[in-house]
Length: 591
Image 1: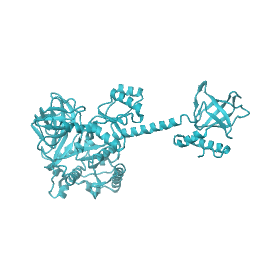
Image 2: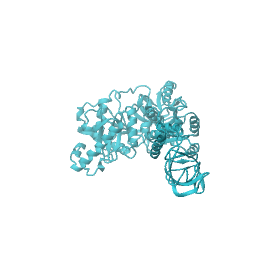
Image 3: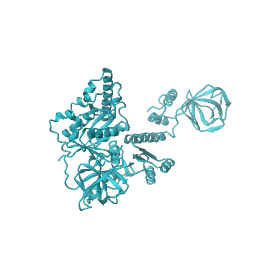
Image 4: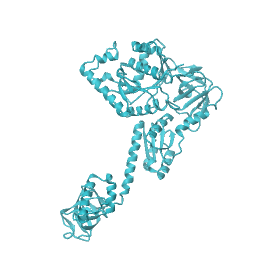
């Protein structure tokens, strides 16, 4: 038999994900007979009869040949849409709705959502939300979406089309895919359908449900085949403390039947958690599951659905973990669960890869997949907030390979005391609720780290500089000669050798003063007294002279090799020095 289509809603914060789900639920309740929509744990169950009532004649294209039994809208907040919706081999979701504010376009979490959907090979459609905010948008509830769009005045229609095709362009830019408005799509296997909607006002919802149902009917029929007999397979969506019940598990069951008194085997960080089901709870009709509601006991549930599991000794379970059931054998799926969790957690490359952490195993898997795509090695992986143990591992890794001595945390926190400790020890810890941003932070870290290594190559090299002996600023004629200098380009350091514009060596900078203090260097733009050991002012050195750093050929070759590390001014001075040197020796610095 075919099960209902598991759908999830993803996208950037504040683009309307929750409103869209709420509106779909409200629309289905309003348009269907009482009881035609039910709320299981974490899911809204929308039967095909309800969809037929909402979509009406939009479904005539199927010619009474609809096989899909309905939709299960998985209702899970924020990143849990990705991080908890996993099963072995990919995502639990069959299809996704990517919500994009048509007025704002793509944002960081939009791009992240697409990356994860592509990685898990989850087909998706785009709900171009908030069309009602387009200036001049008018909508007649008695007409279909396309009739309303056609009825817009020329200015409003042009504005709508412009915003729509900006989204089309962003899909191509960030996903490498073609997209178009749903009614213009020629080939759904190669184009992403965009459905204009107003989640707030319910506009475009029938068309959105029609497109989702159509895609599922045409492309997902084989995937929707399910066996409701036998042991259950599922995923833990959330772990909740419920007054009077203790710790409970909100689960999605996507295969088989789960019953009271079944044994359950659930993935754990160290080893699988085993228990026996005391009770299965479903909420009363039309209850929103993230608010308090009344529940009723059931003896069993069949795939595909959601349910709250009450069982002892499940305190250590975390969201995203796989679940299996058995009537009698608690060890039956033990090794399968160990292997499935181990695919994500077991990494033995601690000295040559970054540390990754996340709030759920699904989040960890998503982060790992995106790092793998970018050939960024992983040294260790675990669940939970940043700890002192993590910092100790970072310290040991830093001694071996500083490039990978970085902790990347997805959707987790770093306690204040741990933040202070990491800062004091100069350890690299980057956390963010957006995977895309975490990877950006690491790539920036690597870039800066490699630049630091290259700069170290120039630490003993004489850098190019150019200084001007200011007239009327002679303080001492010789032993050493002291005058006031304007630093024209580059940075002057104590110990640097200097030449004049004829290439004659004058001596070595003995000291630099800033006010009353001796300093080791002076930056471009400063005007400071400089003592030069060697020349006598009025003989080898005169006021208004231009002096340069005396660079030897070895240093010159190295500076050319790492010229990308030099400022534009330093590059100019280096060219001037080369000309001066070659006036004396035509083959200087060549070869």
